[in-house]
Amino acid sequence: MSDKSFLHWPFFEEQHRRLAAEVEHWIGERAASIDHGDIDAACRALVTQLGEAGFLEHCVSIGTAGRGLDVRSLALIRETLARHDGLADFAFAMQGLGSGAITVAGTREQQEAWLPRVAEGSAIAAFALTEPDAGSDVAAMALSARTDGDSYVLNGEKTFISNGGIADFYVVFARTSDDGARGISAFIVEADNPGLSIAERIHVIAPHPLGRLRFDNCRVSASMRLGEEGQGFKIAMATLDIFRTTVGAAALGFARRALDEALARSNSRELFGAPMRELPLVQTAVAEMAVDIDASALLIYRAAWTRDNGAERVTREAAMAKLYATDSAQQTIDKAVQLYGGLGVTSGIPVESLYREIRALRIYEGASEVQKLVIARQVMAN
Image 1 (cartoon, one colour):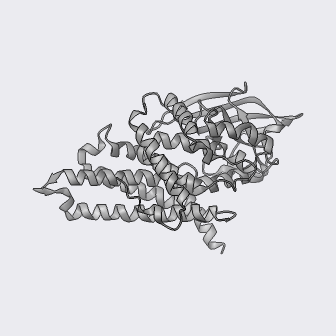
Image 2 (cartoon, one colour; image 1 turned 135 degrees about the vertical axis):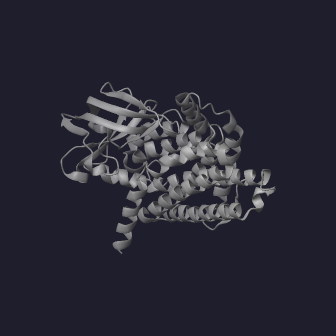
Image 3 (cartoon, one colour; image 1 turned 180 degrees about the vertical axis):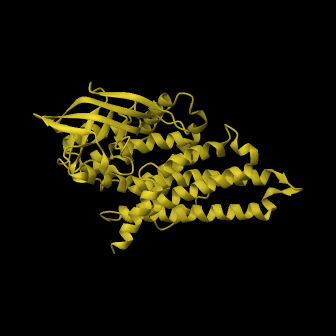
């Protein structure tokens, strides 16, 4: 059983401890029955179930420009879900990230049209930012959106889009002028728009629904634009500023599970005539894992607490949390695999699944290298 003492740190209130217990009970009853054979069906089912349980209500906020979101709650839910099942975490996270720009910048009408459906699990959301030649360098995006009367016409591609192929709508970032980052705007595009197609389903090492989107003269009403023209980059960064911390929380959940599995292995196996737990090298690995987990938790919940207590932006804190938590979780999981020996790289063993799950977190929502640049700029600007 993972350590829960962190819930009594001063970052949390009683409501957070109750929420953590509720999510723990909910996912504990379901994790073993999640069918990973049909990823699309499993994701749809998880979104429905998360909505019915009321957890998706934490992903949206109407009329608050994002201030109504409690990042500590989002992080606790992600950490708990990830510790039990990576796909459950994915399904929850994408409802938040996919609709986050609507919470941050949507009109009242846009929010009321989409956010209640996201919260109840009846509409699956997606965040379409990355392109074949514009990943870490968002300002290099090429997908164009030209005005045509009271509409915009989108042409180009997006790739590595989570929920690509199963989403009911996409928040799409496109270029409306050649003015670099200032030339990007954001739009809500419904999945059944005849100009939008799924060019390819992308298969990755930890199976999640991902797709490449193609826009061919995709006509979108100007009423579906989020914010003013040219504010897309700002909206994307404000959205990531909220949800980037929760990526670190998911990594923390994976790391906690890895430590649990490593402890169970070292307590049940003998090596060189003694229990593994008595070997100094095993104790050293466990100590390093425990230190990295606590350090990650402190950075994550500092960032979440700071945002929840009124900070306008937590760019520095969120970047530190994501960078450290995802990189150190990879090392923690690798240590767990090493302690398992050959069994650790066997399909179906939890640490093998964790090894595949963690890798993408060091890339999406800003690669580790990008986080270092973000942190350096924030520190050097002071």
